[in-house]
Image 1: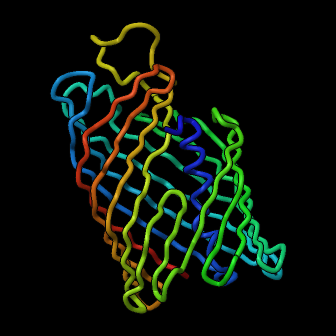
Image 2: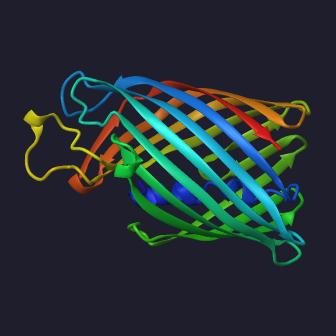
Length: 294
C-alpha cells in the first residue's frame, strides 16, 4: 500500500498522466466538468459494532490549454471535490472531506517522438470545518512520453512531494491502440480497456482510484472515546479502489455524458499519525459526469 502523504500527492500530480500519453490536441481550449458518484453503505471494521459508511462525492473541474509556441502548450486548471460520509454507528470518521487543487504545467515536444510535461499541483484539503481549516500541499511532476509508433506510447517520470514519505517517486504509464477502435490505457487515477463503438459512443472497462488525504479540523471521536493527544490537526487518508463499466456519449463534439457503474473492491480510512486504519466491506457504486469543451 502506498502510504499517505505519498498517495494523495501522487493522485494530485498524476491527474495529467493519461492525457500526456495522448497525441497533442488543438492548441487552445477549455473543458468544464461536473461529476457525481455514490458508493453504497458497507460495514466498517471498527471501532464499534454496527458501524457502516457510504460515500457521496461531488466534483467540479476546469482545465485549459493555451499555445506558447510551435508545439508548446501551457496547461492550467482547477478542481474542487467534496466527499460526504454517510455514517452509521461509531465510525470515528468526520462528516465530510474536501479539497481544492490547481494544475499548472507546460507540455513541449523536445524530439521527433518525445514530449515532456512538467506540472505543479498545489492543493489544500481538510476534513469538516471549511477550507480555512485546511492545509496546503504541493506535488510536482516531470513526465516524458515516447511514441514508439502511432499506436503505442510510453510515459516515464518522477513525482516530487515535499510532505511525502517518498519525496521522489518514479511513475510510468502507457497507451496502446492494439486494434481498430480498441485502446488499453495504464495511467493514474484510471486504467482500463476502451472500445469506440461509434463516432459518438465509447465503452470502457476500468479500474480507478478515488480519494486523497485531508487535515482534521476537529477530533472526530466522541468525547467519551477520547484519550491521549487530540486528533485535531492530524491527517486522514481516504481511498476507494473501483472496478466498473462506463459508457461515454459525445454530443456535437463539444458536450459529453458519462455513465459509470461497478463495485468498490477496497475502501480504507487511515489516521496517519495514530497508526489506525479502518477498512470497509465492498459495495456497489454509480457515477454520472457531464463535460463541455470550448
